[in-house]
Amino acid sequence: MFNDNGSFLLALLEFFLFFAWIMCLFWIFGDIFRSRDIGGGAKTFWVLFVILIPWLGILVYLIARGKGMHERQLEQMKEVQKAQAEYIKSVTAASNPADQIASAKSLLDSGAINQAEFDRLKAKALAA
Image (tube, rainbow, N blue to C red; front, side, top):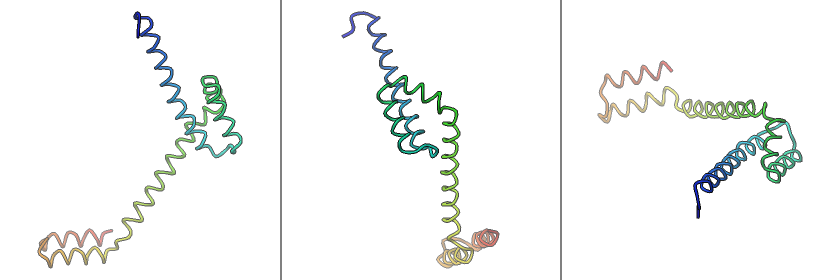
């Protein structure tokens, strides 16, 4: 398949460029569809431009909209973190102190925990 070292290095370079192009497509398509400041027509234009004229499309996109890519990614990460925090609060707030104490009392009655552990769980529930 490879006649000499030059053809192997050329194939390796081609593979690297193809892989780099695929990675850039993922980053740019993620940014295009994450972006709220452009409409559907502009998104369609950018997708077609990046696919039909690959390297030029990527370079033009990075020049035109590259500065905001990081800001849009940070905004999305903050939204995900906020949603996760709200979910955690909703799950932890579901059990009120009375339920926690009742659960600890049932564990004490069954013999799974001793009185000292019950007192610790009760104090923890009342502190929250």
